[in-house]
Length: 286
Image (cartoon, rainbow, N blue to C red; front, side):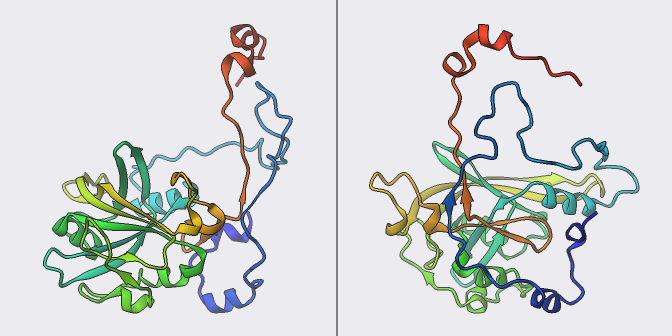
């Protein structure tokens, strides 16, 4: 078992960080071939080596009596990766309190209308700044974090008291030119979405019956903001080489997006050979 599996938390992070190679500034987004360009239907695994492929799996009951709920959190955020990050800007309904914070329980769930999901590890009664503001004002801005302001974005996860301004902590620029919401978008962000609250749901805890353990919020996008050099002429594609998005892995680990590959979506008749070709494929045995 490699050291990386127990990488967090570090007892002296700055000492650990100092021992690592410097930022690889020359690593820019680029495309490569797939690992196995000659892969064919029915083959299963590609040609990449995996020394542990024959090892048995371990079944885990998420609600086992002796398993803390926090173990599920640590397991899931280390396995469901990389996760996109919603860098959420909110403002209280009276305009007095603003907040900026990152969330990796996040994704787009449909495009017509554009709806996004943000997950919070708290009940509404115990809501922290972002959730409290969002439910109060019923609006937010979702910003995508780029390499160029990762440290600033991470700084907003500080355990500041309610009312403290994370914009000041981060040094990022609030841009109040939004057209459908009153909260600010992050000016440094290549891509941002103005959004309005659609609905939310609280979740019943399994480890603490009778308590609420989390809240999922659905918001609908009402405006998209894209830096012009990252946008194509048709206004329907954002260039990953300009966006340079960051993702979340487990614990305190982030991931860069510097490499992409492309695979066409296969057609059953043309590529598989229709039912005749399908019948020729070998059956997979357990």
